[in-house]
Length: 205
Image (cartoon, rainbow, N blue to C red; front, side, top):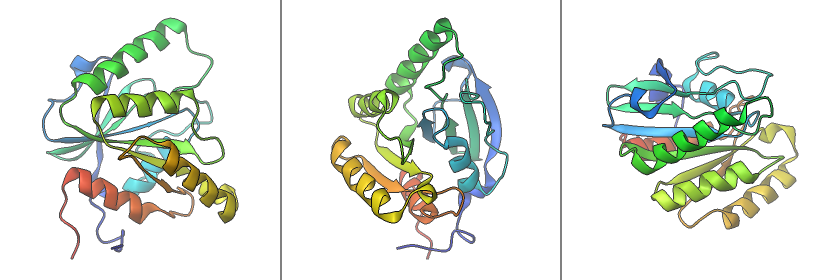
């Protein structure tokens, strides 16, 4: 059941904690952590800002690939959001790419507090190689994945729904998908409900 996100959105309390270049720099592996992942320019930072109601919590930039560390936001002492590095940008040395592949793989294999991954894709350009890699990591690690098809305001409803239906048949068993627009907040209720499920927040009554 949908509810008023203005009144029942615990993610508005999110605050920046740390930007980690190595796994050892992350907060203690306890509680509940949900990661946001996505190719550069897919709208990941805008989605996090829309979720938290904070215009600049997650940095947005016209230069793709600005997020090159695991950025941690704390919702409360037991719950965190992890903003994973954006991929798909060209102006990054191969050495750094290799480092992040290793870090990301280690993160998925070892992070016990990871409760789910929100995989952000531009609805106009879904299922690129990075997206397939992320889905494979989630599937292999047994981590639930929720695909957020962003920028839904930029295409007509018919094509958007067609992409959503196609995505729901393409993702591994157990993964879910939805349409989303950070610009007009469509799909925000649905995203919050999914996160509340992973974070074990009680439904609003």
